[in-house]
Picture 1 (spheres, rainbow, N blue to C red):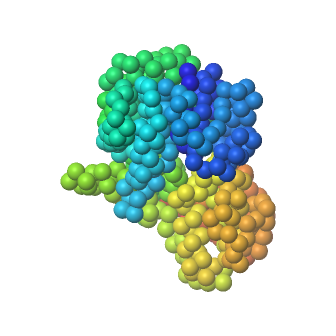
Picture 2 (picture 1 turned 90 degrees about the vertical axis):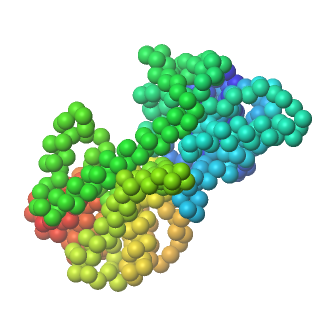
Picture 3 (picture 1 turned 60 degrees about the horizontal axis):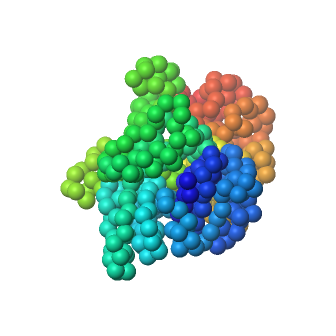
Length: 442
């Protein structure tokens, strides 16, 4: 098939590369000329394991190309994926400007049947807005052309996006059209051989499915963090509780690790957008609001524990931070707990020495050069001469540490473990003051 993908961000680029890799002829379009120039050279501007090699291989094979021309992308293919960003608006609702701009371009340039596939995460009813926008542009041109709009939400985890796209548990398509079903079956046939993973439902149901999935996962995280906070007051080790409830197959072990809160481009934005959607129809989504409130409180807990361990005074202190990305195997720092911590430390007059295996360039882009931030070359440089260490991301590189060595590096011998990486007893025996999440303070 010939397929055009509007948007070369995280979702659009992964979709483009994976669809090209199974033989489709894919044109990925973006309005950012610098980004397109990079991609044409095989340079991938985001960190996602395996994505660079996949893009380069399909560029060489001629199955993947890039363009800044909307008219070219519309003319190129019958199937047009919209995979542009939907950033939060000022009130937390999803900003649909980019989605509707693509819809307008499609309506302005199409001259034959098109299937428009919504890949972006959007509120319920967006597909109808896309349909109406295209229809309005066609009417302005005095044309009546057939087209369909369907929803095909992505379920990609950063750090495992290629695996999720190629071996995902389900492929959701929102449409009642038999033609749409036929085209989408053809599109995903190479990834649908083992068993039929395609799930067809109404357009609105598909849009809500994406939000509901992310909301459920975020709820599990906030629930476990709530239990961890309670466990601290009850003098219970939350790790024992996690194993106890995770063994129940109705609950499972996924997404029940307590920590310093979720971040990234999806959960925070999608929880807020779904809450605003509820408000728009007069419904108070109390659980969603609680999930977000708990997460914000959890991010702030790192600073609170640090202040307690250091006697309350942070001004003039130097704090080492291990982990800047919101999760391992990505360089994404959007809504990351590390950002909330560092910004609070700077406001309190502290200095930060930070290290992350992948997110150093992103941190420099966000904060620039400043006297109260040292971007360390490795984890060793980050802790050298620091008063305390805070762990924000559970990278494998941080899981094994010589605690006696660490005790010698830290002036105040304080470790705040936001990801429960270590055995509290082993850390304490090395002479360190240890504070984790839902575990005994030693």
